Structures are given as structure tokens and as C-alpha cells.
Length: 70
View 1 (cartoon, rainbow, N blue to C red):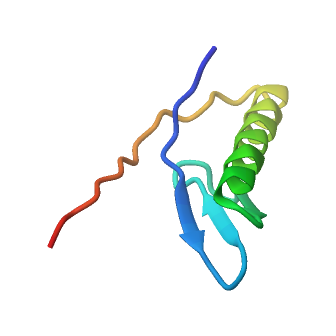
View 2: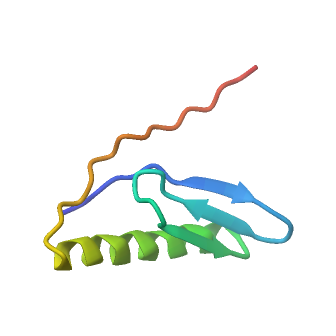
């Protein structure tokens, strides 16, 4: 089953970090945007596997993302 989650990516000093608001504690970091996206995909999969092993349902996506031009 495919799942879709909003991912927040932030650029810091020399690296990128990502977190998933709908999966508390699901985070990743990397030296490039592509690397952090690959790692957050892996973190999401790992998180969902843990939920499944504990017989917990995957949460539905509640967070959306918008870019606002000001």
C-alpha cells in the first residue's frame, strides 16, 4: 500500500533536515536535498513497519503544505 505524507525540509549550516508532522519522531538529515529526501523515505518506511509490527494502523495524512507568495 502506498502512503503519502507531507515532509518539511529545512536547510541548515551545511546540511538539510527533514521531518514528517503526521509521524512524530520521524526525522532525517543529509548533506544534500536529494540525500535527505532519500533518507526520510527510508525513515517513513521504517516508522510504518514499526507501527504494523505493533498492530497499529498507519495514520492518515492530516498535514498539507502550501507556498505563499507575499
